[in-house]
Image (cartoon, rainbow, N blue to C red; front, top):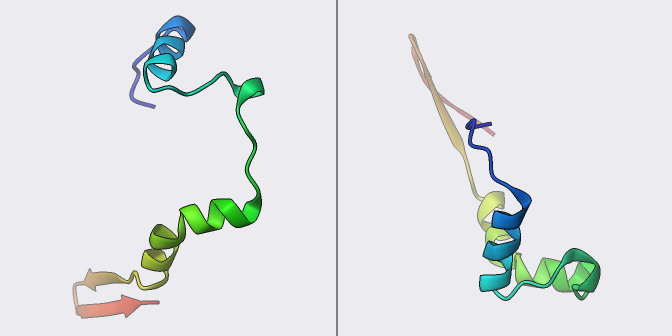
Length: 62
């Protein structure tokens, strides 16, 4: 979406340097292990609020 074109070989190099295996060789995780790994972010989203200011005052949209 930013208009930057990246070749497949560049992506492969970045993943290789980060120690991430190719997709078919990655270990698949269970839904429960995914949720445990993302618990902090998921809980933070539960307490997120958006304040919208319009010309006649601010309101909180829940």
